[in-house]
Length: 108
Image (tube, rainbow, N blue to C red):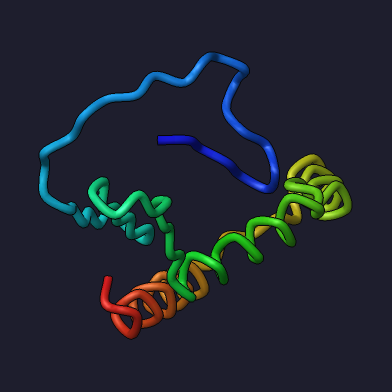
């Protein structure tokens, strides 16, 4: 069976013909579904779910952002240095509850 993705075929290795007597298979792994029918000679198909597509787009967006907010780090460092940094247990608890509610809404 030949593998071709966007016009690229394999790694240059020679093709080996084999006789297969297996039944068509369908396998689902996470967000990717693959199916093949060696008897028909058709190529394998991969279908990516809309969730996987959205996650890929989100990953692309996030990869372009800086993982560290340098301005915020500087402000917190200065507040720690001058003793004006305060910790609000209420704000932390509220944030945790919001996170918990958001995760519950998506089924986590």
